[in-house]
Amino acid sequence: MYCLISVVIDQWTAVYEDAQAHKRILLDAITAQGAEHPPAFRAAAGFLLVVDWDHQKVLGSLRLPKPTGFLLDQGKLRVCLWGHDEIATLSGATITARQKHRWFNHLHTLDATPRGLLVSSSGSDLLAEIDDQGEILWEFFFFEHGYGGKRFRLGQSFDRGQDYNRRYMPAALSTHPNSALLWDHNTVLATLFSTGELVRIDRPTGRIDVVLAGLRRPHALRRRTGGGLMLCDTEGGQVFLLDSSLQVEEKIAVPSPWIQDAVFEGERLFVVGNRRIALSPLASTADGARGDNQVLELRDSTVYKRLHFSPDDRIYMVEPISREDAEKLAQGWTDAPVDTTRLRWEH
Image 1 (cartoon, rainbow, N blue to C red):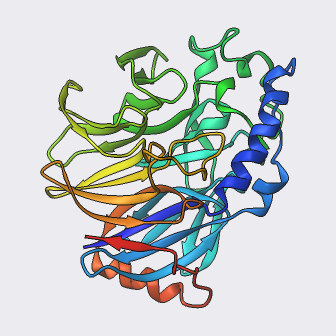
Image 2 (cartoon, helix red, strand yellow; image 1 turned 90 degrees about the vertical axis):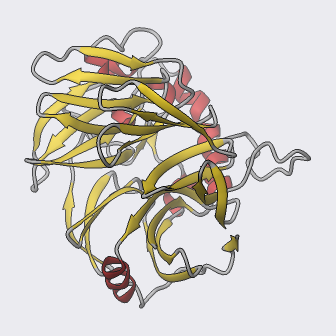
Image 3 (cartoon, one colour; image 1 turned 180 degrees about the vertical axis):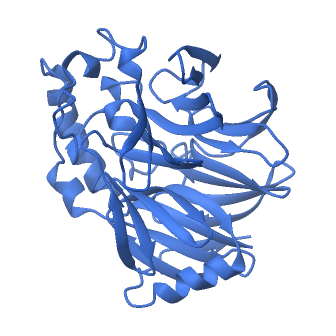
């Protein structure tokens, strides 16, 4: 078993504290235009990691400007880069193409569509389908479809002509859509961080139906083999399994205070668990309530193996990949490997 893992930031404490210092100013501002990325954010980076999971080995790593969601399809790797608010296509360690748009801000996930990619742009309250050149084929701003008003102020001042790249936009300004899938030709599903909802969007009409409510900062919509989907109830401590009718079929408890991502490979469930976002994310706690930053493997709802990261390594996504893809990626990332001595396996 081989996995590709993204770590969005490896200096999380400095970045988080810097962002909190700016957040109150932006939330108190009359207009919701955001601000330039804070200094600690601009200086920070993250990395991709390829591991041989079963043999507990790191095969390769690549430092990047804050990678979040990625898509590996037929050997082609595309990665959302939060640092640049763009989608990068990689060949080995080289970026060979960039898909950009002035509305992109804090990109989270990618989903392949027949026409290109479906992108969740959390900072700008946007879902967009783009073609290979980055041209927008379909757009959906949540503040234009019932999620505006005083609570979500982004829509009151959003300017379609303005460039929102590389700006800090607090999640409280919008619904913060952080994952999206093309369910069928006319339907998009998305998780909304701020409202705690899974929603269904009818593309021809723009109608929104709430499929699930009462979630706690949900993330990571994933398709399930054989139909249905799954998502993370991030602060609710569970992974939800839904059937093909989008009815809840099962809830799997995960021992992590912040579930960022989860995906099945056969009967094995791989989960990204991070420390709870808190004002002092590195402060020690007697009860371990803030948890650890780790990738877990669960079998029959029981933790079977863990890969522990540094408390400053904020993990974003895990994806099981083939041996061929793992070896190809690792061979291309040999020139500037990331220091992985802080990783620790537990079995």
